[in-house]
Length: 199
Ligand code: IMP
Ligand code: MG
Image (tube, rainbow, N blue to C red):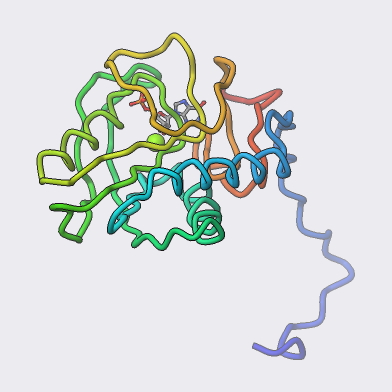
């Protein structure tokens, strides 16, 4: 439809109501801080000289981080293939029940390859531990893990990330791919919702 196809607006009608304002988000890690950390992470990952590297992005929350990190890896001289996996950990509204289900699996053969799992947040550790065990059981040479954020004191399963962006305070964070009720994934920084209707 070209602009000329729009009917002329009726001056007697009130203008459409503006959408309600989104709650304010306080910046925790800004764009420059995240970019610098991604470059450092890529250098650390390149230093272990991964072989036939397959990056597995654990959707959805890690998609922005993974997109930036693979480009930082390219700048560091690493040429991975990239795959995606969707896992759901059953939760009541706030509490993880511990069961993890595969909603979408990787399509590539992982046998004999180094795999780098990328996730957004390491909290109970159940999601990452499940994915790591699964890919190891399929014969990956090494399964390495990289998470943007780690929340302290929350682990239910014994797992540490091999590569960590930031150890973050125990707050609900959004942005840079992460959401609360599907909102805020588009923010270029990681932040904390100041006033939310869900609070
Ligand atoms: P866990 O380590 O298996 O408990 O899973 C952690 C997952 O919970 C993360 O990958 C996120 O999807 C989600 N999550 C935990 N804390 C937050 C948060 O503060 N903001 C957004 N998502 C979160
Ligand atoms: Mg997640």
